[in-house]
Image (cartoon, rainbow, N blue to C red; front, side, top):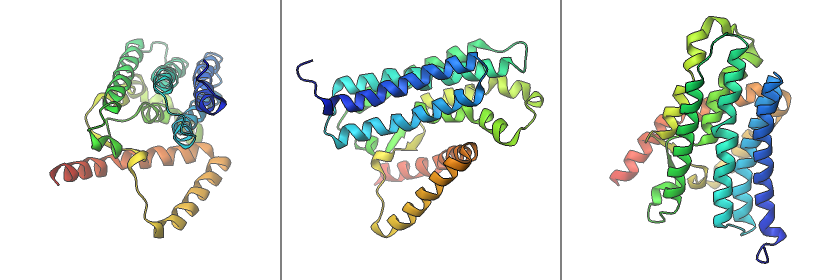
Length: 240
């Protein structure tokens, strides 16, 4: 504890808040307050992206922080989304599949363990630009997408019983797959594109404030549409 300082504690406090949001989402799902439950996981994902960047900015990186972040991610994105989806679908259908929740949790824990192992391999430069498989926050976003669509467009979920009951299988498999996906750490932006990106970011923030579900649906859709491009680029980079 003597080695800890306020500067080093700040990123870990952000991680703890992210973990708290993940646990709270389960509580609100039990209370059938679905929009709050999903929103808490969304906020948790934003904080998850913030803590790592804050740690690098403050030069407060530590092995403790890395392990803590993985454990928090497992709860917030590896367990909470699956339970929220399970409880939500249970309100529509009398019988739901708990086995798929267990499968999702197993895949997310495997994904995080794999990421930790690869992150210690400094020789693997491809990790700076690409992930192997989708990250757990991305899997959480895909898992909760049907709920967001229901909140925003109020589609009749009763017509998609088999789909909803087996839907978690898709993000589970993508987490443990070897598909290349973009990593924000390795993305480099040309200076001439910065003004355009600032306008785009400001527009997204405005949409996030005024219509959060539409903003999240667009963001998640763009991410998954980028996967084929990431696969192609990773193959090209390996050849060169």
